[in-house]
Length: 359
Image (cartoon, rainbow, N blue to C red; front, side, top):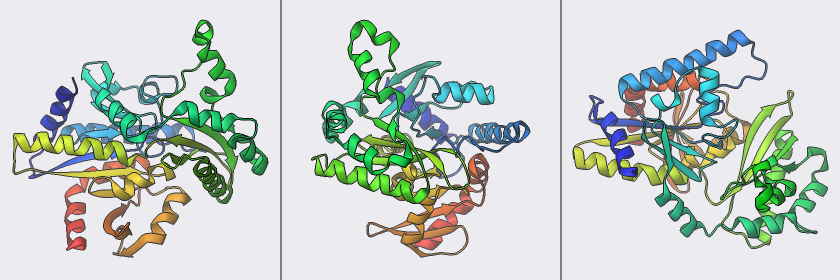
């Protein structure tokens, strides 16, 4: 099942006329789709049209786009309902693979309108991460657990579990006769939500990491993302506990596609671009694929990381020092889907400039 889907991606790549074949992995919220809090309905219509134009251009140019998102695929407020409700287009006509639930599920559209989970990826994730939702949740919710400490230290943030992770929901889910009234918890993800300024967000994130480490969970990953802008300085944030970050599924998928591509045409080279705007995209942008790209209105967490690691370069494309390696990252002057549209149009120029900077 999985091979069929990768071969569909390879067929699309081989339709590109250039020797180098381009593929894009991208975040959704405020990257592939815009969520401007103060936008008028007319402005949102224009933003959504840019997304549709970009997707049509990608299909025309044979460039696969693979979303990497914290959202589920088919659940309420998930990827497919969001796209089809906002854009009035058939999601399945534009995407063959979707990385959902943070970075813990790879979904394949093996047949039209038939999406299935990549079980090999799930098995690898379980084997390599050793992630135990039950043990972590028990540590969070104990009488003197991490949850109590966080709420005491950051009482002004209204820190609380996401609805699917509340103790009340978990009790309902575990009681089989009442599980139809519950939201299914995610196998590899436990999430909080809170409101704060950016500096407090950073402290909440660091403290949760510290408390998990002290509790013996040294392999888990804590990721923070902006959910909604509430005022000039305050945002609502999601904070997720997971086994891996967004770079993991990208680095899992790319070699598989490259192998199939090489079997079809040994002379081709895959050029992978990863795109995002937020702290939970940071690892993907810094370390997955060949080049990272940040959209114009990226969050402070992401831009601060780039400022600290900048090496050299002029204009929008610079080289950064990431874990001892040189990493090209393109800072687009355009927000969200417009950045992706311009990337597709100018991909060969960006590749040339990238090679020149690294030479």
